[in-house]
Length: 248
Image (cartoon, rainbow, N blue to C red; front, side, top):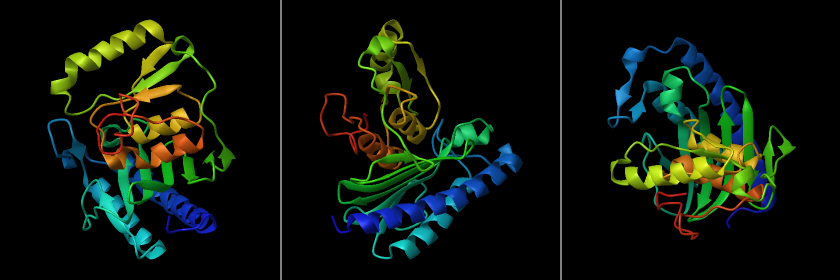
């Protein structure tokens, strides 16, 4: 790890401040957004100028916080790094919700050193809830310590899941999981922001979460927050192939 704990805490606080400011921009744009300005990255994968402008604002500030760090960003507005110290950014996780003025949607910012996640901040824009963690420092929401739920069984659990955009090759397997979960849990919810799903597991609102076809910018910050809140993160086989393995 290239940054000591006191420096990680300082960096985390700076990212919280940045996320809070960016959330103001997102709320303002949401109120006035024109649906005719939607762009399509895929059949169900939407983007707008808001995603791109938010990303540019975030990248500019993070470049000042840690000039030595590279970037991995969803919208690709900056040169992408593949290893070393780098920021992993989703400037607007839950774009479809945002475009339809439907909560939740969020900002997700993580700092990685190779595969080690050092800092994670998820800011849910509508409720103004900031979930954050730095490695070894615990997990927090708006400055208060959070922990995962102590509930030990599926029968007592509320589960959150995502419906991935490119699920055609996994439809049968996906609905088999859903069918089993409906039978054996309190229920399943689908919110539309993977970063928020993870944050809500970290603070105990949900007891578990699963999804296919995730990208690193969807999950990096949330993974650290869940871990620092006492939770466990694996791929579908119980292994560690979740950061790039597209199952969590």
